[in-house]
Length: 83
Image (cartoon, rainbow, N blue to C red):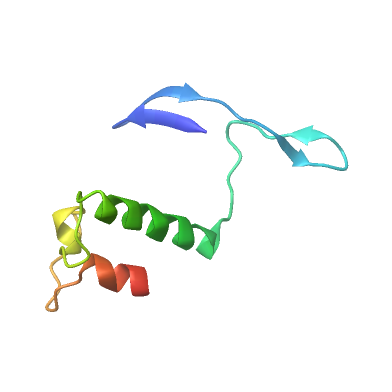
């Protein structure tokens, strides 16, 4: 787990076991291959933000991620959630 702002990390710590059988602990530099497992959590977070009125499903994605290149078709948050 790491928290920071920009390029600056102000908290970095590992918790738990990497291997239950051997008791090997996680390290701070351990990388995880989470693949598609994070999609549900991201979409749920988007639902909470929408419910609080902080976002709208019809908002253009570039409103929140301005670095994305221009696309001929408008990509909305709803499109990302349905992907």
